[in-house]
Image (cartoon, rainbow, N blue to C red; front, side, top):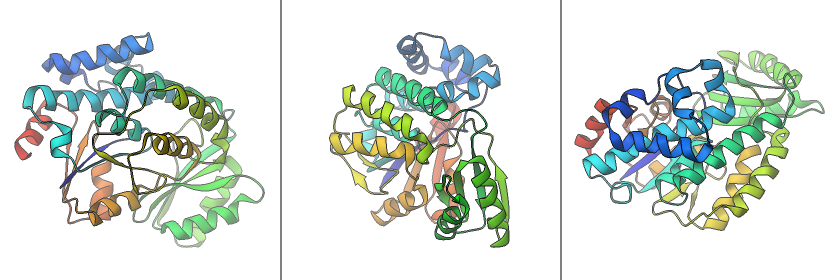
Length: 311
């Protein structure tokens, strides 16, 4: 049993997908469809930069999705591999959850691109620059970080935003509260704490305006039951009903990305291998969570050829 998984923000880089587009007309068609859906040349930004513009949330989110979907399209069209035949589950980290739904036939590619563009814009606009921050706290478990985040809040917002892997938890909130959390983490024996180079404090209550925007957009979006069951970020449990998926995608904007628990849940359900398309960031996390369950990754044609052989 395999799960196909899709990366989140931070996996973007200038040049992403260019070699794949040059090698495959099917990949190139994905980038062209995303460009058309957004009404701009996102593919040119992906391939040529500048990096500062690509890193903007409204660009990075659809760009990362586009590369993942281009990888999947190549597997389907050129290797004859159907996701529904090879995957028991799909899952994605934050924005990757939208990619997972697109891969599983729940959302169309153009709709996914437009939703992620809106999501990025809404998340960026929810909090003025300099008001919020995120920090990775390494060496502490999720329960400890949840407690110290509550202690650090002091009337502001501070929450455990991403439970990525054993000893790798991210906090999000007001910049002063996040700084207090980093100090508390050091006192509690954290191995390292580092501010993340992000433009907004994602996955905390400060994102409520973005959650409201996504609730309106998702209510109007054509969303079908996925052909492969989704393991949702905010519940770390299987979901397939379209109304439940919409609700959880809205909750995800402010809620914790429970990635560690999601991986454990898939392993408990019998998953014996993970396939990451469009990035190489989730594999290292999975090795820390379930070291006996292998992950194969691909961002280019050689990687996809290796995956095709393994499947």
